[in-house]
Every structure is written in C-alpha cells, then in structure tokens.
Amino acid sequence: MKIMDRIALILAIIGGLNWGCIGLFQFDLVAWIGGGQDGGLARIIYVLVGLAAIWCISLLFRDRTPE
Image 1 (tube, rainbow, N blue to C red):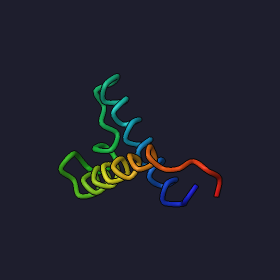
Image 2: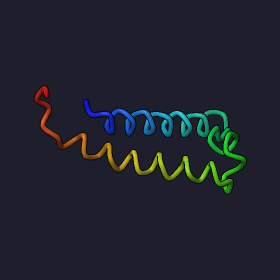
Image 3: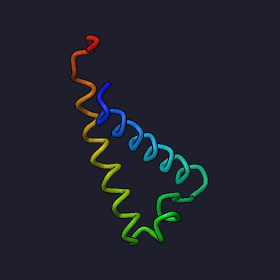
C-alpha cells in the first residue's frame, strides 16, 4: 500500500471518529483541538480530512493485485 493511501486512510478514520464523537456526545474533537470550528488549525484539519476522503474513493476502483 502506498504511503499516500495510508495517510489518506488515517485522515479518513480521524474524520469518521470525529463524526462519531459529534453524533454520540455532541463534541467536535477537531474544533476543540483547533480552537473552534472557525479556527485556522481546525479548518486545515477539516480540509485535509475532506481531501483524504476524496482520495479514498480511488481505493474502491483500483486493481488489488500485490505490488
């Protein structure tokens, strides 16, 4: 698995866990770490997680033969 794939999966997992926290506990972990939803760090994390999710879409359509 390529390093970019791993990074994208890790970021997508972080995003999923954050959404789980929001759904279960009404607590936005990324906003808390990044100084609120409008904080610069939080916005960067949100963008990176979104880009990672888009990258992960490509994983669904790739050939799964070992490299």
